Amino acid sequence: MGNFLLGKTWRKSNKSIDYEEDTFSNSSNLNTNDLTTTTSLSVNANAKSKKSLTNKKSHEYNSSKTMSVILKPTAKQTATVIFLHGLGDTGHGWSSVFSEFKRPHIKYIFPTAPIRPVTLNGGFEMNAWFDILGLRPDATQDEVGIQKSSQLLLNIVDEEIKNGIPSDRIFIGGFSQGGATALYTSLTSSHRFAGVIALSTWLPLHHRFPAQLKECENKLTTPFIQCHGDVDPMVPLQWSEMTVKLLKTIGFSNVNFKTYRGMSHSSSPEELDDVSDFINKIAPA
Image 1 (tube, helix red, strand yellow):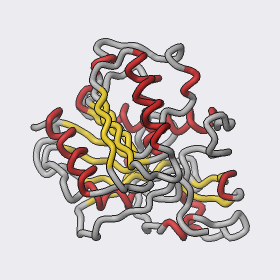
Image 2 (image 1 turned 30 degrees about the horizontal axis):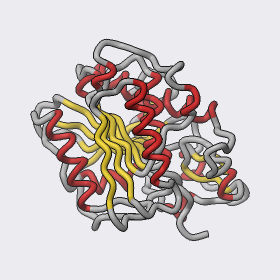
Image 3 (image 1 turned 120 degrees about the vertical axis):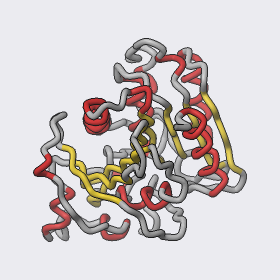
Image 4 (image 1 turned 45 degrees about the vertical axis):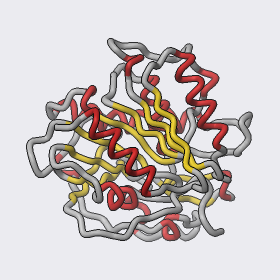
């Protein structure tokens, strides 16, 4: 089938990284007995049909728990970045990317989405934050799936808060449908985040806003960085433009929109430099 629709298609060279893998259940309680070690699954390995999902490792990902790759801070932790991958990927993919510019005082968490059938890809089961039924702006959206994945993200946020990191020192973000989940969460949660990183993505259920915006102190000052390639064939640049316009219409005052010439549904060193600068300016130490 080639590259999966809305999945990650670009990699930096692999680099040895110091990480641990953690699991977060659907409840907000973290059980340290759930810490586990698993094997990284490639994009192709994730796209299994229902019939082929019979081995134990595949079913581990099809459970009620979200496994996360964690890049541990090497100094006193003062901030956290939680970044969600795109369709068919795992937390391993983006952890290797962020390891190139990680900061010693920041903890980086890369959850892996559960395995589920994806209608747009012929019902094949793969890591997905929610089902995708079509690519038209008026296509039916998986509202239940979006809300469930948003809650999984919030569970991780809650654990970081319990560990002493306030929400205004926690960045959330993602690529493609991972970014969509983060954008939705930033608007519907009661937290004011340090920043929102939205790469090659869009705001899902946009027709619900501003009605479903959950306000809190300084919410509208939340910094956003929305990045998109100008030749993206999967998620049109127009979707990002519409998202930025809606965010500003709602009243968000710190929305940074960047486009990249010749970039497809992928990432680039220039984009990653912009993401790194965005994080460093907000949480330099």
